[in-house]
Figure 1 (spheres, rainbow over the protein chains, first blue to last red):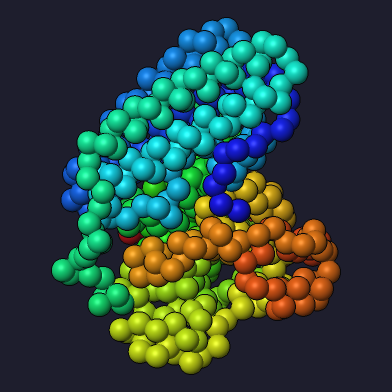
Figure 2 (cartoon, rainbow over the protein chains, first blue to last red):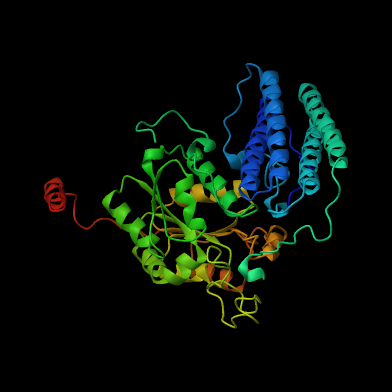
Length: 177
Length: 277
């Protein structure tokens, strides 16, 4: 039941696609904001700063989708009524990959994975849709995500991969000592 | 907290301004998100909800929610929640905590809360460890889990919380995984809506003391069969499963606990007067 973003076989209406796109970004904003706070609390300011930047990036993207939606009345769906291809919206960080000593490179790798999942989600919607308007909109969203993927890759290149002992803690939690 | 129920709130509106102090990667963040989503989906007003907890990492959860909260003493969350629900049946009472609080220190209370079948929902965030006190084995820890605090493992068989709950009379029994935020939200909404005592065990990884639990996301799976209304059948299923089936296991139809004595305003007034200082 791990995260996957490759399949979405059902037809979406334009309003459904818009609400899915909106929730992807809004939940990503929430998720990155919380992670930035968690990292700051642990003294990992470098990664906290990156997650802060991701929060702003996703908030801008959410605003853009809101503009695209305009006056379209978006359906009010319960969380479990969304048709994600995995357990959660594709841009939510997988907490299993988070560590208090993680490096910026690792944080950005997680963010890249999210962008790739979101891109795959929209590409699948575009591929499966029989409605030209929905297909076109899904391709547009996939293109946005593709751009984010490119940004992430450029960003990752600026940070060295983690050392072998990246998680070494001179004062480890008791049960781990 | 608002005194008047506004129009439908978003899940984020149910989170308080207090920032959680759980470790980064802790599954309890997801449980908090699921609980907020479930009560938002049920459109419960914050002043209609009370979240009661005991002691432990997960028991901090009332502070992070925008509703009534009671952070009680170790292992006594269920008696508190029971008393509150009996006194204020109009409230939606949710009890929350961890496996140490609920199955060890508060273990006996679990039996009787199931038996009484008061209309509350009990969420146990099970990480098979005492996290707050630095990683001692809990009642659900595997006997061979080796650590510096239990070299070679405890050698003691783990507790089967779902079987215990079924045998003791819980009216709704389910298991979830914290990483399945939306699935857990749905399950919690069902549990809250189901009359009587609802028990939800949520496998919630402790990434600090049990980094191996990061793999749980790849181990959980839906149950091979849907829920049953037969408690003995449910118990057999859960006794023989691998511990990673997630889903609703049992929905009972036992009548929920009702107050034996009708509410008496005059009595309540006199009673409260006795406590005036």
